[in-house]
Image (cartoon, rainbow, N blue to C red):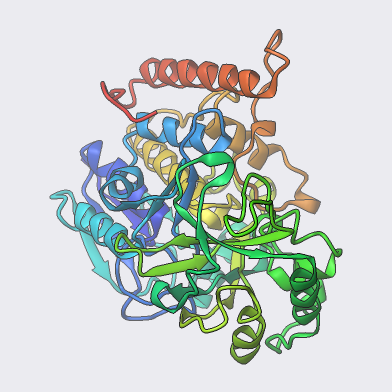
Length: 443
């Protein structure tokens, strides 16, 4: 069979390479690290997670949970690696990021049909190819992509949350609990009204990294730096990452005014990240401001928050409905480079790109799941969005077709939407003879 190339060893690239290899293709996977690093990566492992260690909810009634269910039907490598490396996080799927990357790297490098080349691709390779180089695509390759697709590239900036060591926390103040009595997988730092007001004031005057016109940066709304949220209103943080709903401070027996949640990074529970606290504050300012959070006064920071450049393509303007070049039917794009936002969304687009490149190489037509599914709804958004105002998108129930006669209660309605999506996806897989649906799969 004709061989294929995948450029990029992130989540989307790994999924695309494995999907092609499962179809019997010989695959060359090109990854530039460690020959050339990026501002965000710290290792040369495939599938390294550079932001959060959470893949969000697994509950099918949630949009992210439903997408995972669809990905399991499509033999997702990400979810297999995540199952091997998970850490407690309530209903969310969170992982030890080092174990996760090791598992995904092993899956790819040990596959007999995949050859990993550690080199920088400065141009789009000839022949059938999936480009999944992510938001940190090198300048040379980005220029070549722009030449292939025309002026469709955009840029935005992404921020990373800091990580603290458990031993340095004040466990007389910080308490373990999940919202509404769920498993106590999170640590919580409670703030009363005066402490919240002081923290907010400190964030607003803190010094940030120079070098960009931050007011004009088109941040993705789902990953705003805390200082950007702080400027939007007095209670924006308290209704966002610092919301206290469903929690009770055991010292007072009451709900705090605001809460900073910590989620574990590793199985041993030594490293904890500040949930939703991505930031572009200078390092010294992070130490000063975050030490105002009750329980973090003497915190040891294992990783500071940071800011890095992300690049994505204007999907509706320069790509086909399936994410391929309008000029080369055997050139597919996948991952965050296409304007999907989130780990699982990126990985799912990689699976679909691998499946469709194989179909094109066989002389067939590429396919996209029906828009009643989460993956199909996401691709419909990508192809139908207004090119003049295109922004990255992650999973949400607003993407899928409404269901006539669905229950009025939101929880029941979303369960019905999830069940319909599951049935239709399995039917779509069978119709196109894509992959066997696993006999057993996690919900």
